[in-house]
Image 1 (spheres, helix red, strand yellow):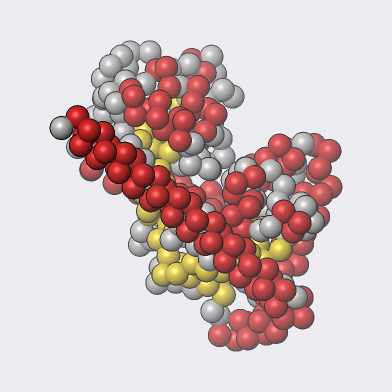
Image 2 (cartoon, helix red, strand yellow; image 1 turned 90 degrees about the horizontal axis):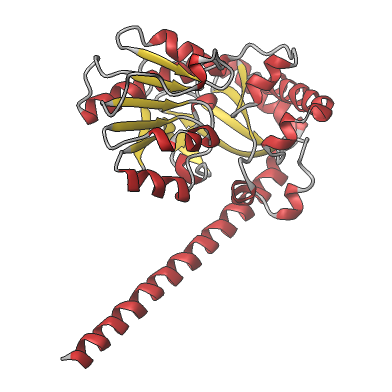
Length: 330
């Protein structure tokens, strides 16, 4: 009997390792197919002459709405789109990386740079950023698109450095966050009396989210806020609370010690929380949700990570009927 249990345990172990190996091989194959397809698409489509031709027809038929620029949150995200040799040549040169159709709406084209947040925040790269900004405007004009939008911290950086951007991302993202909050509250059975803590509530997006939540008690938690706003709100104790993270993964991690099983987390910040942080939250016993973006009719290729089969909120355009994708991580 003992030998049989040991044999069964070995068989189960071998089976699990085989499944893991097959899954890893599958991910590697999909990754190469994705990057190879993007290499071909970029070679064929990333041409100013072609942009002008598309723009000629777009001005007559109005099928293309927006151009969107993304950047990788880390090296893993970068390698999800491009090979290393290409990554090194597109730090400040936007290149075509995909397209999408927002649900029941029009088409958007996706471009990317490979600079990370550290490079983007560095004041020494302001001229490089301005070159990227101007290039995206040139592309928008050639394509005849109505607007251009930018991922992550780029809009805030542009605002702080005086770039002439209309910050269209904010209005869409605020509506998406509000819809996501309503969905999570409904799922978790949280009435309007349950307070909301907005982490990053003094930022470009966070401040507008705070203003939009007029039907529930709201607290701001932000390192750039007043003395009271820089620490966890007094009086919340172990009561039910919804923590909405619009700041960063690092900011969310700094608040883990204040969490408890009655808390619920909704993350909007890019990228999604890493596995290590998710495991910490799992041990605490509180659920965490992530806003994966706005639902799309199709995305080619899919965005990576938790954003698969959806459009990042900052890439979408305002539509009161838009559907927000919210996924539960724990």
